[in-house]
Length: 332
Ligand code: AQP
Image (cartoon, rainbow, N blue to C red; front, side):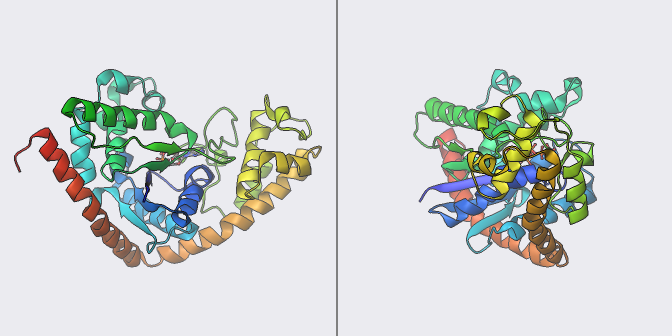
């Protein structure tokens, strides 16, 4: 069976962007004909500074978010990256396969390192090589992600191809990105040109999965928009990033196409549309945040689920790493 791997960083609380761009698809793929492995990538999170107590809490909260969204530890393997050491071990091999020139072209590094790249961690620069290892240590064939991860998945294929070529093997598969749906790139509520992000300093820019109904309604009411009514055709959203973002969110939350949504709401002013969107968001997110809070009351149970996931995962990763070491010529 085809195998799915994807991960999210415990670098803060989950946002609506993570949910619509990634987790919602994770749940769907779990119900389809795939073997599914989902990961809290704590080793990736520490490529930028994380307070230790926050990292611990965010990792458990992310696990709770996965489970509350519908990822079942019975149907999927749910793991914390650092508990499966083969990720980091294969990551080192891939550090020796990836080229500096490839890494320098990564736009996420440029965005995250900003102007002060000399002061970025070496881990942040190497992030995509570890991500390739996360995926390939399972020989995963499909990776559901948001649009922003497309370049990293191309690099994953480059690394697999170079490894196979250099060692004359056909060992690592070419993985397929799965970037689908109406909200593969959810934008900031304050700036239609910026991605909604956990680490944006402005809390008003994002909807957190743990926001209550009042906070969600307020953030949507205050979301930046233009003064015009909504169009009835998709083309009418082309030059209107903020309007497009809110319509995309509406479509993704209600599992409808953008065309279908515009058929209904085209012609409405934002004063009418925003409350509809807020009600929809609350109705979809409130059950998840309630369940997250319940799960967070019993962190020991979350830790048990992650320990079980790690041992299931290692049944897959240990033989693949062992074979990789043999291919490379390591004595073991
Ligand atoms: N705004 C978004 N729209 C759609 N998908 C998104 N994803 C993130 N933001 C959006 C998808 O969520 C998955 C996990 O992302 P991540 O935690 O690995 O890190 P990120 O992409 O860097 O997400 P954030 O929220 O912006 O985190 P910080 O602020 O820590 O950098 C990925 O599949 C991603 O595409």
